Amino acid sequence: MSAATTRSRTPDRLCAEAVAFARAAAEETAAPGVVGEHVAAVAEGDRVVTHLFECKEPGYRGWRWAVTVTRASRAKIVTLDESVLLPGPDALLAPEWVPWSERLRPGDLGPGDLLPTNADDLRLEPGFSGGVEPLPSSPVSEEMAELVEAEDAEVTEGSPANLPSAPLRGSLAAVAEEIGMGRARVLSRYGLHSAADRWEEEYGPKTQMAQAAPASCLTCAFLMPIAGSLRQAFGVCANEFSPADGHVVSLSYGCGGHSEAAVMPKPPQPPPPVLDETRVEPLPLHPTDDSGSVEPGAPPEELGHS
Image (cartoon, rainbow, N blue to C red):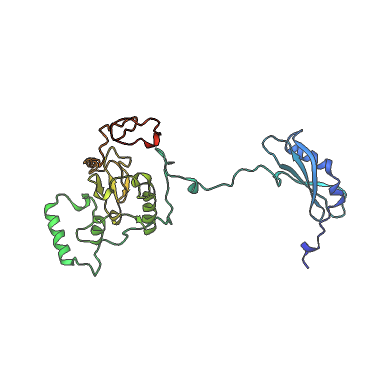
């Protein structure tokens, strides 16, 4: 059996009775009048007791001053271990701290601010990091590369040491730079999908503007195509009167500024009415017999059309 299980959780008598000693220690740490009533005495171990006092400091509701006292074995003098302010069960606490990387929201970045990107950012992946020589399976042969280098050397003035460093034509680095891969890192598949989800949520087919649009951006002349794999689903709006001007929009998005919405269809003409309601049909006030005389006392139900 370990020593921890044999310890008694009953507060030591001399340590439990040292309430005044503990209060004096708490007031020395805080200030007179801030330490409130004695709440409890908790046994922390053999001859180790923590006295809890209410905290009357404004803004620390539910907090308690915790003063731990102890004494040596077979000693009758109680000594101070520590005095600290701790939250109680119903203490008013600040919200849990969240790292800045999780608190950051779109639009928080201002002029002069720097946003470092982690090396393991899931939105990015390594770009081209190979050498300048083409791979053995490259369609560009070494002979063609030598001819290109000789041609460049004839038309370029100055010593090679003074010329800017650039990838050799026909090399893998030159091809990577031409297709936009000559960067340290490029967007990963996860980065592309997350960007597409954000753009489609703001300027996508499910928005209220797109639901009321006469047509989609796919057929709009103000849509500017973008490069890369996302060009199959997105473009950039170039209509200054559109709410999406200068934004990446889904090809299924739309607004009232569609280029073909200016040709308004003619309003439909209703067909001529079957009943002519423009003429007034005269009706007699009293019915007549065959001779043309009016029958006296005729009820209103018998009145008919002439």
